[in-house]
Length: 382
Ligand SMILES: *Cc1c(COP(=O)(O)O)cnc(C)c1O
Image 1 (cartoon, rainbow, N blue to C red):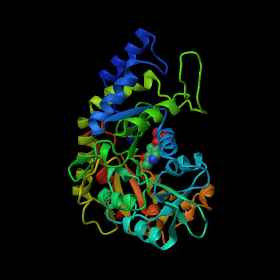
Image 2 (spheres, rainbow, N blue to C red):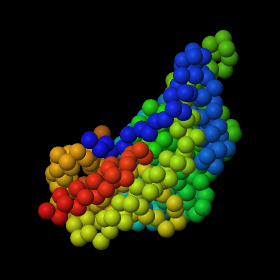
Image 3 (tube, rainbow, N blue to C red):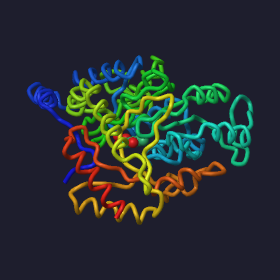
Image 4 (spheres, rainbow, N blue to C red):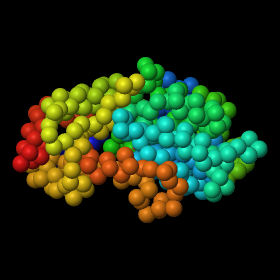
């Protein structure tokens, strides 16, 4: 079976892991955790990094430290992995769901502008959603598949409404916007090192940012808020630490970032070249201002919906190829039926059930890629 997206591991990962065992540093303290924070910041152009137990807990911490509280609203796209919304809900806050732009599958910035100007008012310096009375607490864009929305445009909106910009860059390591690395585009940027991402640590996350004070507070709340060695704690903290074992793999992977991201881009390029101009499906979008990290690759079928995608996955599986559907929008998920919605979410609704992701592990061979192309062409045109 040619898998969808599996880790690409070498002797480097093995060596660093062995070092953990040899030194007994396998838990939440160790040199690899510190090293991963430094190298992740360096490679993404941020000043500081704080390692966390997952991308989700990294997002939760970033939101909390930026002042997101119970019953407040966080602006985010509906087309994302549910973890983005969960991080908001873990603060007791409510997602305010926006549609996406066709051109990059990222949050529709014109809509954000429009919704904010139509539906909110300033009350004593706070931005209040008129109908619900809830305060807007943050804007949380997602760097979908390693694409980046127009962050200059979002920054303008964030400044106008005095809102923090927190980026869910879970799968976007290596991406660029207008020639800039992603670590400094938002106030805080969060990566995931889950097993299906381009760079993995088995599991884990990384919060990136330039504000030293803020980043120290993120470190503090993610490590049980301890203030002395004598078990003094100054608030209800969290155990959101990454272990040295995870960080060991993460360091080895991050040192290979260029190689791994380059391969992701080559896979996308190959699929796009071989599958362009087909009548029954189109390709993943490519932003004009960005150099996408191309986390996943695949196709978008013209019609047939989720049943058709399911059927195609079965046919692929019969030929030894793993294909999958992609994110079901947040507003169609049971726990978020009551989230606040923008006036229209049409692009997300019309897109999600037509996406078929195809094998794109960074260790996929040329022969395997060729086989995928051959099979996809045959089953879609039959
Ligand atoms: C993977 C992913 C997450 C969650 O990261 P975890 O490390 O699995 O918690 C969040 N948002 C997006 C867009 C993701 O792709």
